[in-house]
Length: 270
Image (cartoon, rainbow, N blue to C red; front, side, top):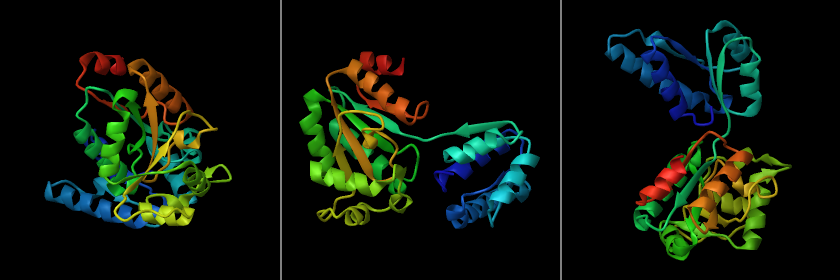
């Protein structure tokens, strides 16, 4: 699972509401969190008068155990990295797989900027951005760019310069792969690893970006308190850029808009 707290709960609710039991096989790094969450759910089931074993957590996960579980169960709900999702799809058991998240958020010129900045900060820092739905790229209309950037900085953002951006890039990605040591770590720790002098009280890192795709790694999922920031002219450019970013990573996952302009909201929705 990419999000060790939320994913088992969401999957278990879906399973039990559909009159199924569920066995949850966590990533080894999440096994203690998973046990805690499953124990909470089992206790809640018993207090509802239901059998605790509607939710069972595997406490000592292994590749062999997970593969056997996928072979024997009736349906697989696979959330995680590419290899795990591929294994689920090739197990012979019906599977629903979920790939990377990469939420893109647009702020237009009708938005309540203070409200948007606060909510973006909450999304970017909740659980230190372990969630796949954490805001990864923020697209600002150019007419409100400077004002909104100021509000993001006020909320605890730190704007990186070009030299710092390169240092951070070489810390988040190693040999083309996401460095697991930066996942769900506080901003000061990531900055320290990158050799960036982060001022006191800064909670998330803002990286100015212009493009998308492999040549612009910050346009992808970062699983850290790091946000790519873009400037767009209008709603058409925001929609086009959102599609380009998610065509690289996160297609079909999450995007959103802060707006009080119904035309922009409906154009974005469609």
